[in-house]
Length: 441
Ligand SMILES: N=CN[C@@H](CCC(=O)O)C(=O)O
Ligand SMILES: [Zn+2]
Figure (spheres, rainbow, N blue to C red):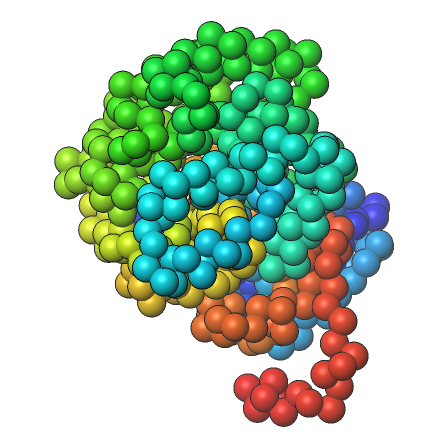
């Protein structure tokens, strides 16, 4: 083979492909036996896609005469796919640290919400914020997520509620999609809370008759790009009837259904999602047995959010039951002012400890299955030839350290690569001479 390529990653101790047969998602036993190569190398081409991955000797021979823009020696290190964060609310203004104190003192999420705090507090501040201010904090948060290893992130609107602010948020997401290296799946979440002065029915009608037609027009003109439609289907927010109406209309204008359901109360959201052909439902702490069965049959993925159950001390979603019944389980950070977590390594750790997932299951859920939840598993979520060259290199000879070292992803993640380009490289100058821990392995 001749001609230049963008990036060669050589001699990694392990390359975690996750899967190797073009699987769109993993369930059951396949989640417990991920595809991993030992002593392997990987090549990304100038188009940003993976050209080859295989044993180091084979790649060395095959690419002997090829030049590379960049080479990284990965001896003693592991390469994994870029992590996929399937659920975030990263565009907002206004600090809610005081609510953390209230929750620690015993207030519930809904106590705060009904007293005008929570989402409503953030909506007030986000409505007042300028587009530039929102972009600047959003950009910072995305860079933090990228340093933590996420290379594809779902990003919701939903702190605007009125059309003007929802569009402001979607434009901010669109700008990041065009300007930054991280890949984004954009979600319209105008039904995140019922705006002051409206009933849920009036709010749903405003979305169906005003917001969605405008969204369709802007998408057709390519001014913004929206992938998914979301609703907070919850007692005291949007009931099943309004949720159905909004999701159906969203689907009719070409959006994937991906919504919040069965979080604080059993709502039969899972049953509704499966019936409507939803791509994903998030939370599911209160899902019914029938809902789990319907999601498995309908290939509707469950996006579990361990940070929320932890932060709000909710009962844990039944991850084991979902896995045993063949539901496509994915993970998300739920990054938002209630659950301030950038790190999918932390999320995987919580999923293992609190939801009893194995490390392999958690990694599959944070890569290929999270990509499936966003309709992107043909391009993301595994290290396979033809997929986008998004990956991370960790300074450990075993990949499981990414989950095990739950307080220290900053020390472990050495490189983050998006489309074959190094977008983050750890500065380890301060650690020189203090590497005994690493050398022992
Ligand atoms: N549950 C609804 N939405 C968010 C919380 C948003 C907020 O509190 O600002 C969630 O997924 O956890
Ligand atoms: Zn959410």
